[in-house]
Length: 282
Image (cartoon, rainbow, N blue to C red):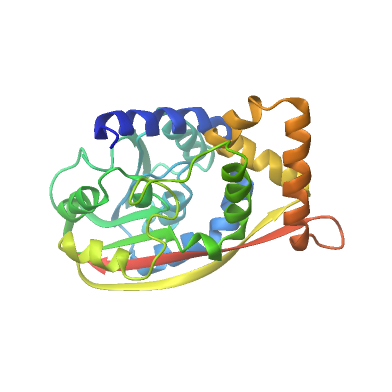
């Protein structure tokens, strides 16, 4: 089993490497994830003047949306473990002229915040990638005010997410990446029903509510989707660089053939996805 410290370092290095690609593809991610962000912000029951913490926030889409709900008298703290991500989130918050938004580098498992200091904790697709999600959720519970709410999202089973299932099966089948170990930090770690509710209860939250939200990745073309994968996934990007020209051609031909069922008449690509969304009270 990988040492937890080494795993955390490796995770952080991958996100540091992937951050420029996420920044470049921010509009695609924001558009696909918008219904999830809306659900989380609604579930958190935010009010003007509230204090909100976004954990593993990446570019801060959810935190920036929450800033509109709490208004200028509120406060939103966007956090992420990768400095390149927090730098990008800070630039986006500044461009939106949101003075109530602050951005800090912070690990989900060790939140540098006072006990009972936030009204809500938000995280879209973050806790599934944490080495110790139970510890991270206990930290979220600690920093919430009594009666405060947590609202999180994590992908459902990979079979319900062909946007990733197709690519992963091709890469694993060609020996370009290995299947994740059980309960390791990866996007579909919480894919089976019941896992998120159990984690929330174990961390001390009450009355968890778990639902699903469907979404669609919208890409201009098959080439656009390849660039999106290559740019936002350090593992795909690294594997692609190591391919010979012939191997690259064979991989693209296979991927294009399998993704073609989602092509639209104008050549664009609409890829369906499904994610769990959950909320609970501290």
